Image (cartoon, rainbow, N blue to C red; front, side):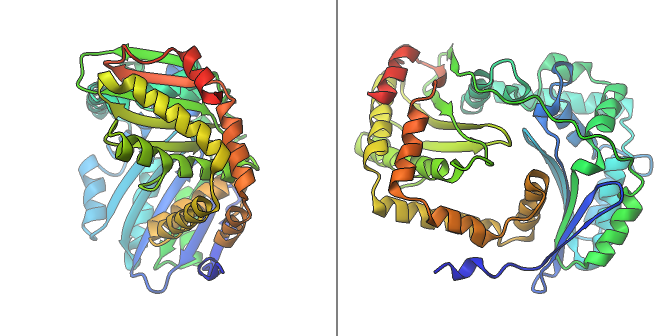
Length: 427
């Protein structure tokens, strides 16, 4: 019985006249308020000459407005004990703040200011470009990060969805205020924005403040990003390193695909924890890697399944052989015990994400942007519980018949050819 998942708190939702959605969840046991604005725009919404612009804009939001200096933005939040942050992903950009419930007006005033009135002063822009270039260099010097950028670029070759979020030194250096403001006018439109708040909040008060700070934003037609089309392929980067970092991928599913949950469960059974098959065989039985995991990244119109590991150059061939054999075997004999355990782990992950106001507003905002509604937890759990062993095995078989993507960095001379890997997926 899933009694934990039927106690949904009340979520109040109001849509402003310009299209911006306001969603609140009052949590009487919480003395703080967490608020955030999610924009349905990320790196995949950029054109080629805008590559990295979403991430730069997120940084520049804290570098001064027509009313506040960069220091004043931080002071106004921290003077009331709060904190403020932002993040950029492939499909979303978020700006969040946490304060005492009595200070939600301060948080919303700052959020509205940085989103509507950022100054993009030339000196600040130049300094922040330098910061991002250092961030770019740090990734280039970190093989276990760089390999995932190479992986995405290969899986979605020549497409916005596959490009690294940070951009390139060339594009980063090219951005100016005019480019930033044109992107904001096109992409930061109220119809693809959600203001979510949870904790010690009052819906009517949040709506009133949202109208004050965001109500004057003009509505605009929504622009769909370029469709993501999985391509597959390989990218091998030989470097003199102690360890080879390898990611093997296959076409996955969108979170809107009916087969999403079965695919996600297969990935978890294969490499999602200390009892997973890959961990047991690769790490525990053979000692071929310090860690190995599998993942399924869903997007709005596509998805990507993958396995990531690091190993010594002398072990890359054996690691790949063992991984392929483990994947094949999983499509044949996943057991009821494994299913029960994986379902329980998914439920715990879902509940854990809902135990903080921050987790709750992120879930609400993302679901409203993606589905136009908040999906009750028990609805998700019913879908997971309904999955059968046969459905999950079939999801795995479908994955293994896709075109592979391989990204590898380090001492990788012994890594098998992509053709051999492809034949090894289906035996």
